[in-house]
Image (cartoon, rainbow, N blue to C red):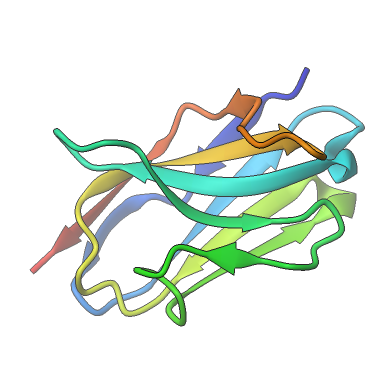
Length: 119
């Protein structure tokens, strides 16, 4: 079982930056692939970024590529999402997820953190 707690959300001006963090419980954090999804009001939840258990092979949704960076620190059981140039992002709740190695879907979800981009 893994519990995920997100933090770092808030209000940011268009063009600004924000860094989200996700703290995971459990001693097996390094065996999970980790990622971020987001959901805007009235919209489907969408994939944002993911990173493998080893920290290699990060990949991103096309809409955030070049502006967002996902990273993880296995010794601290944390994963981060650095978001820069927040211009076109919708206001959304960002969710941290964990997936078993080899799983094609997320197995655990955090409760989410709200990110509001003001124009």
